[in-house]
Image (cartoon, rainbow, N blue to C red):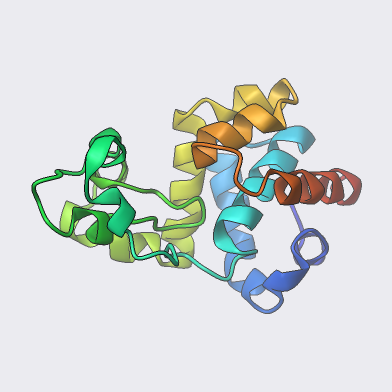
Length: 177
């Protein structure tokens, strides 16, 4: 179990928000077998970057970029349905993005699709969905292999913020027992 003090050392900008998430993070890591030092460090490094160190559980961008084109289709959005990008932009600590991912998450947790975005913005929903995404995307195996670059690609779709993710990973590896 990670302590609050450890979480704040790993994500210093989380400050008081760390207390809102610590128990839910620990529960999600247990539930989704994020249970080794390298898995936890990798998970936390991705969560830190994707959520601004627990500051955001909703994507800051408008989501308009997800409305049309191949990206919209890959995310399960309907290019003809104006507003899908905004409606299904990233939610939760790892930013579940797109209608397809929101629908799969809602199904897994037994929630109606029209309620999933709001649930993903709660501490429990943000943490559990991050754990669900982590496990369903095979990220435990990549973390076990020590491939933070591949982890980042799978979470982010690219390498946005790779240096920051690696820096948080290194801190976590020093802080965690």
